[in-house]
Length: 316
Image (cartoon, rainbow, N blue to C red; front, top):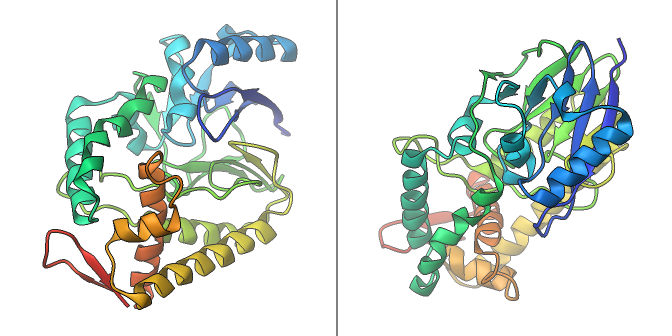
């Protein structure tokens, strides 16, 4: 059965711009991702549904590619009985679990301190959670994992694709060679592998950049004719773009290595060199990018960390 896929473009208040959600006409009418929680997005969503010939009440289930607010927010506007399906790591984020959010803040306080961030910036820690007002307060109805098929979506298999988010999945249709990819691959910008606190305070943080590279290399093993992306236009040349992304990331990492060879530095010192104009406004994003490159270099054996002091220092 060929699934009819309808792309719906919704506005967001974020720098990334519009977000794409997809309505799939399968055995069940399925929405993949749910946009951001604003009245503007809700109005546009209803208008676009009507243009296609559906109403909100027709939607039977929602599949989440990941937990970021621009992909889950409108869940709060949908019927309370609608099925919400996604990776188990979505749950603490979309419920906005209080214990987890306390752990979130404690994690970043320790992490940023280790990274050598100027103490004046620690007062901005609460702002890291400011985007959650665009998220939702819902819970998963059921969870999916690698290799699962979703009832009502014949032929679409779940791939776990962590890196950009620990909760990230994609939907792959082997027969049609199609991927509904969320933010795993975007045509016009690189997907930022974001630093996240582990789900439990007893776990170590995931090294998002290394995870993301592994995800991209794995996607090279699948024949893919088209990727339906979370932002921007569809990707028709997925394997070429993946290779380009991997090559550019490797090049960026070795620019970081050059800085460290000049002199040992903390992650924050490197961040200010890489992003001198934007690090103050986008501390979370720029530090995620910096740490990602450092994790990559450490994994290759190019750098070592002196963690004996309060502020960790990277050496070539």
